[in-house]
Amino acid sequence: MPAYEYACKKCKKEFTVFLSLKELEAKPKIKCPYCQSDNVSKQLSGFFAKTSKKS
Ligand SMILES: [Zn+2]
Image (cartoon, rainbow, N blue to C red; front, side):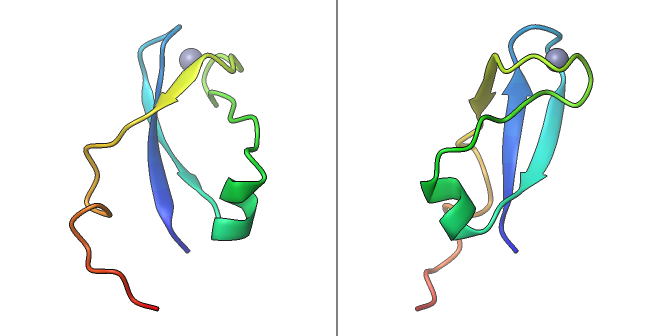
C-alpha cells in the first residue's frame, strides 16, 4: 500500500499515511495524529515520485 508523507502545519510534525489509490481519489480529510488538526499538507519530496510507475 502506498504511503504518503504529510506535515502538520499546526504542530509541525510529520507523519505517514497509508492510503490506497481509491482512498486518495476520494480526497479524504487527513488529520494530524498528534494534534488532530486537519491543517496538513502533503509532502511531495517523496520517494514515490522517483519510483517508476507499475501498471
Ligand atoms: Zn499536528
